[in-house]
Image (tube, rainbow, N blue to C red; front, side, top):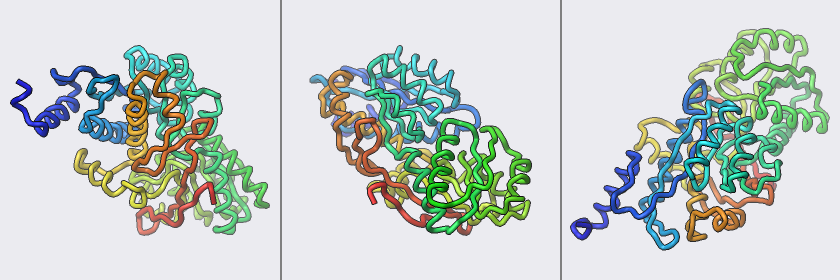
Length: 383
């Protein structure tokens, strides 16, 4: 019966069945790859963005008909919803381990990635974080933890230098959302400002559900800052930007991670004009495979990239390449390969240092101009 099918038809049927979550009857073995992120709740749009990027990478891997342990395998994505909650993330991680996934791409934020990492480490499987920019994630000393974008120690420092050197700010107010990501980023940023001779005139705190920033901004307004730095993400940065303008503050709002999205532009409207953000990675149009990926994403899902889909795509891609080079999805065989890999992904070259961090991360400074995020400059940690 197989002889009646051309290779083209076989690949087409495999891709269709894979997308439906089924294993082709003629496939000898299925290799499961986990995807963990917020698929429901306020951050669901980001979780779905990551999942979409991972799905495209799975399709690419299946089209390549990769052989592991002498068999042609079919890859299948197993998605779990951690609701962006640390406790749920631990349960999700255990579910993925129990389903015998070969490796995991996730989680989205640092607060979920840190506790989940211990579960994956105990099981001996790789966790490749597509985001999770808090440095603490890879500072746990776990040889199964990896990250495909730069971390916040670098991001906070580079944002601080940009505020001092380029924006020429002297007085800076800092707000953070009390998450592992937001607080860690704000701490590093504030430290860089102080070391560089700038003055932190106010340090305020909210939580990750705050939408009314009137109280903190009223306290800050009396300090007359040049810049307000926010350690948080787009859904909160947008109402913060609007309230800054409504209260007549002249300060420039600056962020460093999670600002640059269509969601921010839609929520902030005209009050988003002039906001500055540093984001890990290159602009999509400057990524080695960015334009092609963006078109494939639009064709597959009929929507735009929200934030980090290319990094989820590369998270799956680097895992699959480690399997391929090792000739196996057995962690004992592929983990040493992954630790030493040099992989040419859509987002750039992926290679890891001893902690599991990206060796040569890039960061991009963006500014909102005419309701569009415009790249201003690209910074490498090697510069």
